Image (cartoon, rainbow, N blue to C red):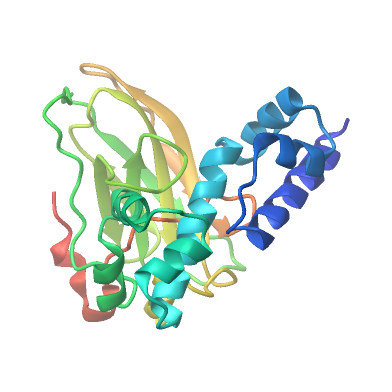
Length: 256
């Protein structure tokens, strides 16, 4: 089977996920939609999207919850049920873990956060490694502020271990990278459209990019990262982390 046919099958499954976020979709259901064996489907899905079907579905559910919190007045309990959670407590815990703030706080802040804390758990082993690089935009994409984070998975959720916000295309530097394997994930919206950074109805304007995985050990010399942004695609895992509110020039609020 060609890579184009595999990608079409994965897109078909993602479209089915979006149409049935409140349903109990199993890997068997997804494999049938893709018309693959279960084993082949799981491997193909990960190859195309960078993550597992289950993690991708979970991210889509939380993305829809973010939209509902900002765009509607449904209660948190109602939203929890609409996106497939039987327990509002489980939903709220999962939402805060992935988005960085509670559902009610996300709503109160209009889909943003006033600060982004990096993950500084005590079991991290810091290195002297520094990751430097450059973010560029193709000519057909409108440039804007760029949120850049270092995450343990290809899904931008939870606390990054390092992050920065660039005021446009250009160079970046992340110092004292913790030992481990990380993914550099970048998210940007055009200047003047910072209100779209909450990720609700912003798909056409959003630009994304990634680099990695990057493995850091003690005194590792990391190669420079060149990241060219591109339009957000339905194959990209949703950005779950609540992004910094740049509408109030909050760059200085980035917490280290």
